[in-house]
Image (cartoon, rainbow, N blue to C red):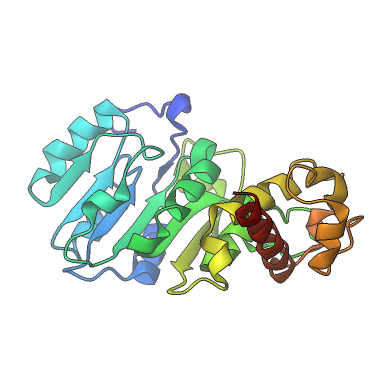
Amino acid sequence: MNGHRARKRFGQNFLHDRRVIENIIRQFNPQPAQTVVEIGPGLGALTGPLLERLDHLHVVELDRDLVERLDQQYHRRLTIHAQDALKFDFRELVDNGARLRVIGNLPYNISTPLLFHLLDQADVVSDMMFMLQKEVVQRMLAGPGSKVYGRLSVMLQSRCEISKVLDVGPGAFTPAPKVESAVVALTPRDKALDPVCEAPCFARLVKASFAQRRKTLRNNLKSCLDSEQISTAGIDPSCRAETLSLEDFIGLAQVFCETESATE
């Protein structure tokens, strides 16, 4: 495609469907003075349309060949950060307290860890819009009792409002992926549902709860809470994590954090 072969190791599937691109830009609605960051610009399918509306754009791209192409094509109004998005410090781009807007067709092979990386920096982000594997979007939106409800669901929902924007078929990309895709919008909450949601102990407890899906909380949380402490939060220790609501996890985390503080 335009002389560049998609590289599997970078998870490259280049978006080319004009209707999908126009829909994404319309839904994202960038404004000239906003600080926008595009992750994985690739061949510039979203980059060009974004620059039609923005004064300036930051992009994070790891592929050196694509960095050179982007620089040649858009260098005057584009700041290229030739780095791994998983290690990129988005806080460096904050100017005068204005929060960032983040967009991208994310490499599917790193999408989940990248979402967690961005969640750690959610305090400097006003909103995000991403193309992701549809199955990941389903996990993000899932509720208790769903087979795909898990750590990603709880962690993102505790900090963000999430909504699916549109479904996208494989034919919208080159090369066509073997999976369906979807665009999702995330808006970090100005205030967490509970202060404990921003504490490291919350993340540790949620991760431990889903460590082995078929095991009960009593077994998964042995390193965090005993059965009596789980019961103190109003939760049956014999339950599995997939049956708990976000509020249940907040209650468990409050007990866990209090326990942690008492032992320090």
